[in-house]
Image (tube, rainbow, N blue to C red; front, side, top):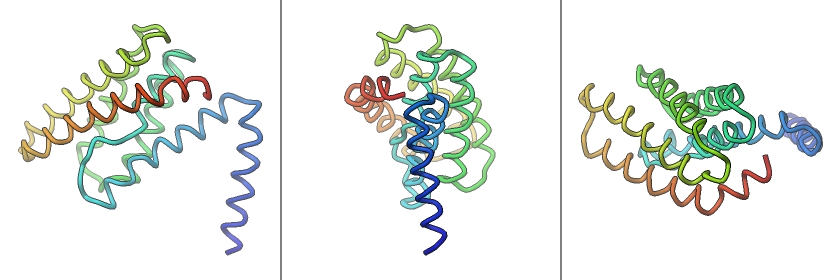
Length: 167
């Protein structure tokens, strides 16, 4: 019980500091995004819900390439640790997350939805190709890609501007 009180105090202090410092705000949102992959470990179903892509695109558009790389590696890396068992595909996922930064860096902030969807599409193509070439179930690959594209469209369309203004 005492441990959770300490955690709560630390989170409150970080939240107050986040009001004044975008780096802390970005760190907290990246942590939140990484937790969005936790459902993979719990359900063992790879539904394409995650917030890492949204945060990576926003960080790249708002703060630049280097910040986008940090957010991509931190949120996807930690998220993959939370959400999956260690496997060779984790490295490919991290490399593909860097493609999100590269793709979104060609866009302006007013093109958040387009940058997000194109980044998602490129990410899915790389990940799907890798898993298909390693013998994964094509139905699983297709269901992930379809749900990932649809859910990211909904996330970018409904939450994109809101998160962009918060970060």
